[in-house]
Image 1 (cartoon, rainbow, N blue to C red):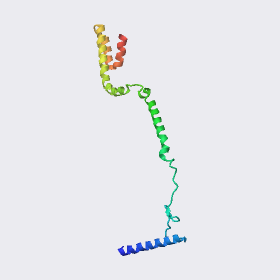
Image 2 (cartoon, rainbow, N blue to C red):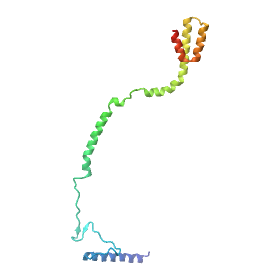
Image 3 (cartoon, helix red, strand yellow):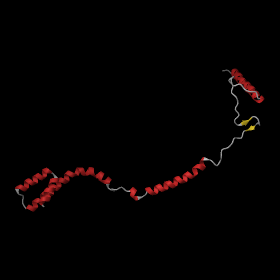
Image 4 (tube, rainbow, N blue to C red):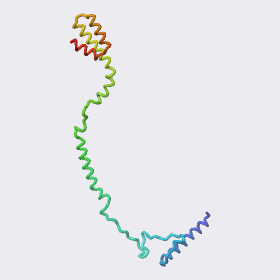
Length: 161
């Protein structure tokens, strides 16, 4: 679009606006059918020639004033809830060493067979010390204890003590 064409288009718009203004001031009804928009005076009153005064909302009914009481209530409710939560019976666990047991169970599982073997050897030595000398039946009993495990060794040791 050349400068001349832009100038002509601008002149045509200004002429149409001037025509509409004259029709509006004269009080003649405007035709919306011809594609032209009508003026809507939202902030200007053409009858008095001054700015329109809009009805204001009540200044007392603001969001800040509505929320003002809610903040105090929320703070008081939060403090009451924290006071209940800080009760020591709610904080401390029922069994304070549950986490220690959980961590040590894995390590103790590796040591359990060695512990059972050591217990069976101690029982064997105690039996030999009590008898003073090993009899053939006692040797068979001790060999059976090694094969059966620590559970049977504990029972055999407690029966003979």
